[in-house]
Image (cartoon, rainbow, N blue to C red; front, side):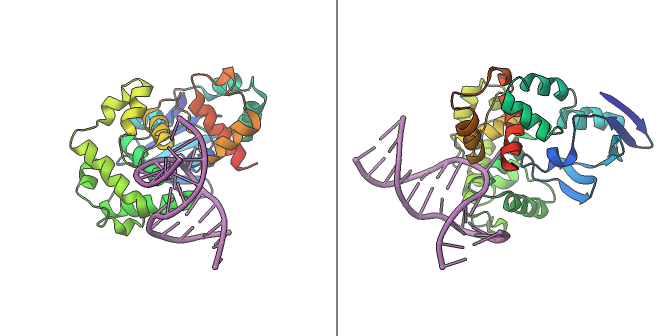
Length: 263
DNA sequence: TTCCAGGCGTATC
DNA sequence: GATACGCATGGA
């Protein structure tokens, strides 16, 4: 990882990174594009303005400790995506997908926020998902904790206009608040146990559980199959995923999702 | 107006 | 265990 710290900014050189492809590709819903080369967003309550200036990415108004502890982790900067793409490209379709969006990275999001986000995502479209999450954060002055949401009811959450999903958010929050489930414990479980635990939450089926694991717990072997990925599997991989993506199916999925949606 | 969106719960066989 | 259907909401 190549960076310099100067005047409260971090300047990062990273060829395998694109802001649009990473922050506006349907994996995270709380980043706002404020101008052509700038996004503003959060990890939990830590804010960030990030921009592309020439060859460098600028992490504005931060210090080295926050950059290392929070942002280098969040943007998965310790993983060599160049090496990953090289490995994936042994497969013809994956090669095309990797070349199509060279700058996708998997964001290491907060467990609870990712779970909520993908509960909201079901049978929904990306602009509406963003709208619901934005109203949620506006209401609480940041992303609410599960303790905060556990006090709510589907009726009290009507301001979200989340429809039938509101009761699912409350169910998740209550199960965490009363100790029936622990996301910390789930993230340390083997993947089958983790899937089963997550799916005890109402509104969490195979797809949402897989997303919670991939985006919130960095289980990169998780492979969420939605309508788009189903299309990829039918068209390109009728006999299953290629050997070269084994162990990092979730990251491969990111490239494939972006590729098929923009074909 | 009708259809659809990063699915899931429920009923029914 | 497989398949069909309803579900809140809003944009196309």
